Image (cartoon, rainbow over all chains, first blue to last red; front, top):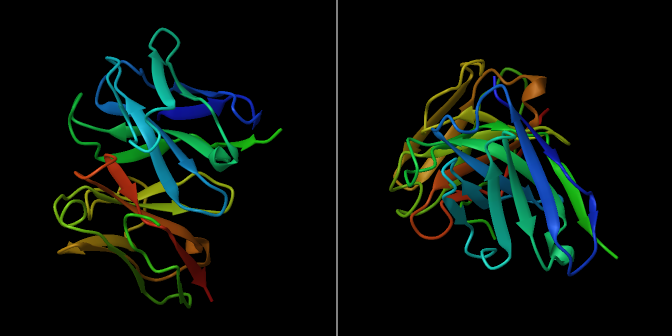
Length: 125
Length: 111
């Protein structure tokens, strides 16, 4: 069974860059059939799709965050990462990594079957 | 404001059935059979309960079922149990903006 685990600082100063890494175990990030995804949840609120990456390196970002987001993948470490720059208090949220089933690069994202436990990132000076 | 509309809360007694609705548009729920439902207990990660409108992942009790009619999808939980008390989120592929949109979530209370 695939397991995902987020890691990174829990506190980021305003205007700086939020950086998180998701380590995948129990399966190869290069095996295909998945979009490696970042989703966030503002405190007490619903879920927001941040973006995803295929093992080939193809990415898709939420248009509302696109100018500030970079998702990358390191197949040698079985990890993928999120960088969100110029953060503000509005970026304070729980951040989840997840595996989202797809038939292939560019195909529909079907559903997210495995999720990390999530990590709370607070933006504050 | 979430792209998909869910009731803020529903409740039911143990053993009863409840249904949570999720209303979208022809660009998401109505146009594709890529509706999923997630259960989230406090402080925990969401858990996939239903995918592609009505399919249950292995390990999810058959008390959970999903359906869709037009632009509205539904999650039904029959034989309510105390451990079903949680927040439930629907999601769908969308052709209009982000690839996936979520509902605002529904808090299920088991009385």
